[in-house]
Image 1 (tube, chains in turn blue, green):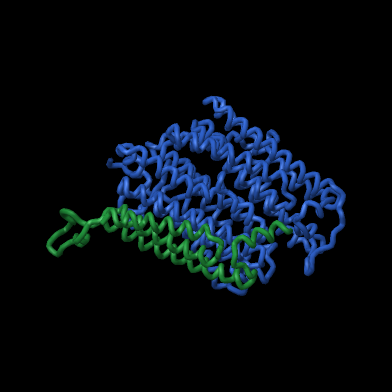
Image 2 (cartoon, rainbow over the protein chains, first blue to last red):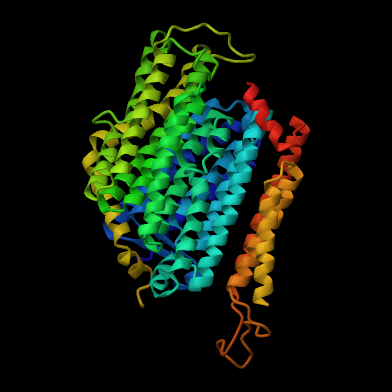
Length: 503
Length: 117
């Protein structure tokens, strides 16, 4: 179905970013505009999702030039559900940022850059053209460079240095992969590439190109052994910014990997082995790194790396059950990781520090908040029936079907260490007696805020906790969706036929 | 022509990566610039090189006939140049700030400071 609605989320974010630029110094209007705009974004995404669910894959051709000559935008169920999840965490971060950004910081154009970032993310979910995907990726990294250096303390710049360099190299490698693929197939439209690839005789060259994509996208996704930039930089910016980074940026890479490796680089035994091995090592290394951290945000950063392994493992096993598990995990992970970094921001507001040693006594001082943050933490660990449990169940089931016992071992180890680190977090932050450290200078603690300001901190966490609970108790609906997506990914003929009906 | 370009592209990738692996911030940015130009040249090379047949439709014709150069790589390179140029100018200002604020010139010194904390 040809439908221009696909472009609306992108245009909405573009318009928001531009309009908010005009409210340069009126930060109050920027906050309201961002929250209202992202609520509209959520609404549009849900409408698009329902439409895709009813009518199947939607597409639009830029300038009415038919594929493969024009630039194609495609929204299948995978893209549409990613848009909904993005909108949910985008809205939550908008609210959180509206409360936690001090005036001086918001003057540094946080909201316009943030909406440019969301525009890039939504664009990459609906791109049907490989070069177009590259351009959206560049938009994302330009915006993220702006955000990660925002405010610019010295530690932050040092973290950003690693982030900027590695992401630039990743883009160049990704573009190199695109150049190879264009040389091989003579087209950039993803559906058209999928048609052309089986006709190419030189299979070795395709494997090389596939691995070039895997490295380029893998750096952005933070898989072993290319993840070192992530724990080195994600703990430096403001909490609202690390929330959106931790929740969404690496997951866009995961989305692109799923798209590319299901549509045209169908994993042969060699690439499948590479992907599975990388997934297992990511799980183990991320888990080991998380075990020894002493800073809340560094701990969560290492957990991001660890959990990327779950999704890549699904891609490596490559059966419809495992893919469904990996996609379910992807949805769950975006919501929970965004929430975790907002929780770290809230914990900082409560106590004035990120160091585990100086934290403590949250349970005696703030029992209600403790209850609230228990939901995302337990969801992350995957205590049944919370949302982390179901995708892992599917993944292990998928692994058992094809008898990949090594990767199952890594998955179990990864979730066990996650449990251990969250238990450590719980022990240090919630149960331990408050050591009573001083607040930093010019710090307004949570207890002195009025109730609207308190709501800015707790409401977004509550929203995402509710979404996590929905994943847990509305699991039947979600499993139906992810099974449908996994089926579509395993059978890309439908996708190709919709984009290229004549051939 | 293709062979010469292929050698040049390989050389630019090697030089870029070598410079990125050096410790100095200035060499890092020069390395990124060379690598960025290398990838543009690679796009140009892999698009196929056709000499002397511009993709222009003559006045009396309605479509392109015979041999003509593929215009798409040019469009891609143009886009890529702009994007990479933008990113590099950001990186330059950023690295300059890094030097002004942190006094960092040697990349190894960053790591040492982190270990002290």
